[in-house]
Image (cartoon, rainbow, N blue to C red; front, side, top):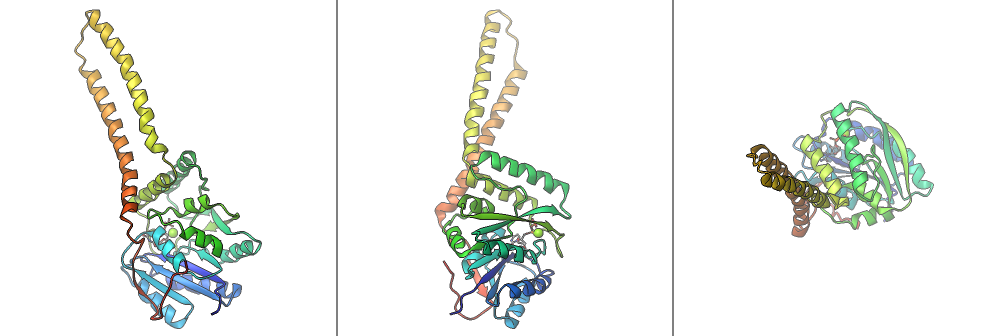
Length: 316
Ligand code: UDP
Ligand code: MG
């Protein structure tokens, strides 16, 4: 059996307007690197004609494999599904919307040839990103870097090259709520970074809704830090201490005979304490939900079909 030199893994959701352009610009780049390449498209439950397009491409080019997941499992899981099916010595992952320019793969590969195990990318500029996404993303990375032991570059993207050794290591991590860039940072090994400018999405709209972005952020934080769980403890101490001071004041007032009906102060303290309690329970809930998700131990994803009738095996 011939060894695959380089695999390209592309997770996608409803990207019918991008697949052909991506494939056509990707092909000359990878063919130049090695004739022993493979392209793995992971269709993450698209409702449009994405998988038909992938099937057609795979009929023309036997080096293209399409995997259709049984439903939408999310970008991070689709990415891992692709990694599990990739057989290359070097594996590159990139988005399907042309925001990760295929030409950069040459730079990634050159770094890998220099001896790096993982080559990450950092976008120096992203065209067409709204101010809201910029601000939320900035503060999210500040928060995660402060809360957790790992470091994540604020402009990191899921556009990177990993060698066989590190792909296998990555796939040993079976957690369901996956935050790939955190896991990669946690892994260590010899990592390098290269910069690129992210152009606008070629066609279609971003598949990260506000809700998905918040889930993604919550996964990132809960997977790498238990500190939010402890916040409630400190908040509790501060609130109780203030409460104690107020109690002393109230007792003095009582003995001083100035027993004012304290409606406002009671209402304020109930609201504050109630709010802190609800937030704390919510934080515990976030962690508990993840423990629950892991405890069920369901498979990370299910495959509906492949573009080939040959038997497919995963490479881990
Ligand atoms: N994607 C996916 N499943 C999802 C959401 C997104 O496979 O549930 C894919 C999407 O098709 C694209 C990549 O993940 O190839 C990044 O998504 P997108 O470009 O929408 O994110 P953005 O660049 O806006 O952050
Ligand atoms: Mg994009």
